[in-house]
Image (cartoon, rainbow, N blue to C red; front, top):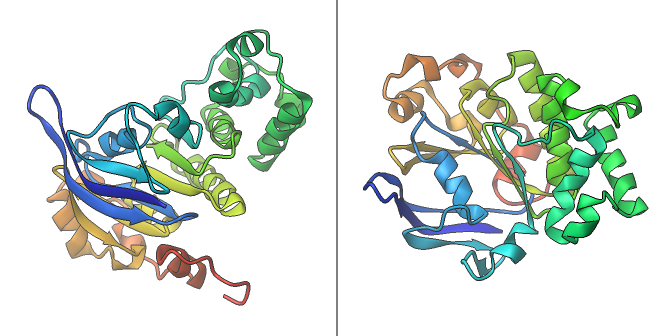
Length: 273
């Protein structure tokens, strides 16, 4: 379980990004962070992997607080999908995925690309799961489309069997059709491994469609924490304050499936559900 205990972060210039954030994310949940730009979503994600340490409060992963003294250990348990992806353009698809093992691989082996055969097989399996064809394994990342690069980033995030995957605006630069497909692959990877995903999104319609649960921010504070079906037009107006560009997709409110309801409550559903 991932827990935020009264997390507050104030930047050196006095900007308050998060204020007393407190909620739990159970294992296996696909939790979407929603809110306007500057609401504090990315800052909160960065407190999980220790890129930012809270000014007050703490982040706890399975009972272990994230501190400056245990960052190496914590980061081995966390996968990351950055908005800019951070793939290495000149490296092949396969070796970009294997680069996700750097926290647990000696530097000299990584530099020589000496990854054990079982790790290479796992990378190939993950790439197959995100629908990358075998012929693309040795293509350079720079030769891929945006959607293909996102799939490689998903495979890389899961290569080390993380407990938590953080996805910071993972489809911000993609068109709606490709975005929907990429999010479907990300959620499928999470479901298959019972991996917790904390995903910040800008698109309301995708949050409604893919989230087990939505936690929405405004001015650094949580203003909504519930199932997607509870995200009414009035709630959206409260979150975004009338920023029309952020309200696209509000008309697509849907009733969540039994599986999504169960996961939002922190319970893995039975096959009968």
